[in-house]
Amino acid sequence: MRSRRSCLAVPGSNPRFLEKAQGLPADEVFLDLEDSVAPSAKEGARKNVVAALREGDWSGRTRVVRVNDLGTQWTYRDVIEVVEGAGEFLDCLMLPKVEDPAQVVWLDTLLTQIEKANGLPVGGIGVEAQIESARGLVNVDAIGGASGRLETLVFGPADFMASINMRTLVVGEQPPGYTEGDAYHYILMRILMAARTHGLQAIDGPYLAIRDLDGFRRVAGRSAALGFDGKWVLHPTQIEAANEVFSPSQEDYERAELILDAYEYHTTVEGRGAVMLGDEMIDEASRKMALVVTAKGRAAGMSRTTAFTPPAS
Ligand code: GLV
Ligand code: MG
Image 1 (cartoon, rainbow, N blue to C red):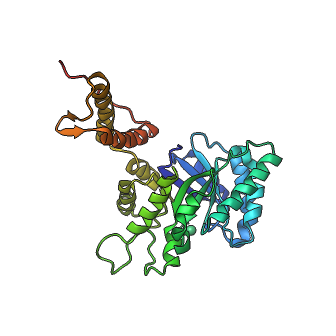
Image 2: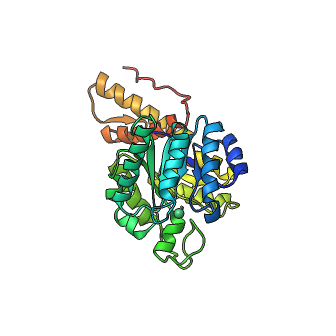
Image 3: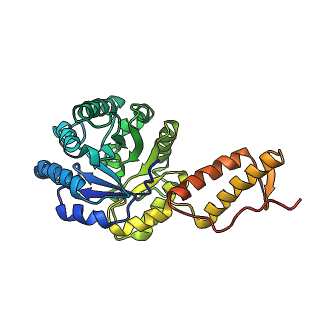
């Protein structure tokens, strides 16, 4: 699985941003042809994006292009121009406003044709599906299983809030008047369940108040706590915060590595299934939880400072 703690949005119509993004430490960069690009700039943006993928230095980052949604006239040309122009420099396409599994199947089929025609490995380009409407959420389980190319399900809060008439204009924050609980909990959990059902990553969407880093951390911390793998970032200052929030703490990472070692030792050497590690009893389910934390920590490049020592017998 690719690391996607921070997924940086870069408008495809802005060559300066396309250049600047190359030096930033985001796990994923997605070059946008959709809502951050004005209709009159869509065609020029395709060319900028192809040039940026071919000529830019994106090493170490997942390279994604967000095409326009299937309700527009632009999608098929976005896909054809970007993949024919720079398919070998591209990891995934992001399809916004997905409402039906057939839309993902359409993209899968078109990608297969372009890959075959251009000598690219068939199935090599992955797909990220944005869930941004009531209909998309209701169909999210089927969408998540629509293609082997799918790598992530992505929450799109701005379009989503508009789609359900949620009474707020502040993307990522609670609607005024909703004082109990979290208005996004159901949506996030539903996307997360579909993602995990199909072995996909779950990515949280943007937080638009880019100067409010505390707000970003608070909102990112919620989806990270539920199990989301990462979040969109719109500004360089949000990148570091996302990378930190979506990595385990050093303490949790070390504890998880210790659980794996202790469990391995006790089950294989001593033949016991449930054992004490410090003050806590651990068993097979603890090992599974620890695997989640160690996988995230290792993907984030963390390393441990303490080693497991078997108890003296
Ligand atoms: C992102 O695309 C959103 O609509 O929030
Ligand atoms: Mg959107």
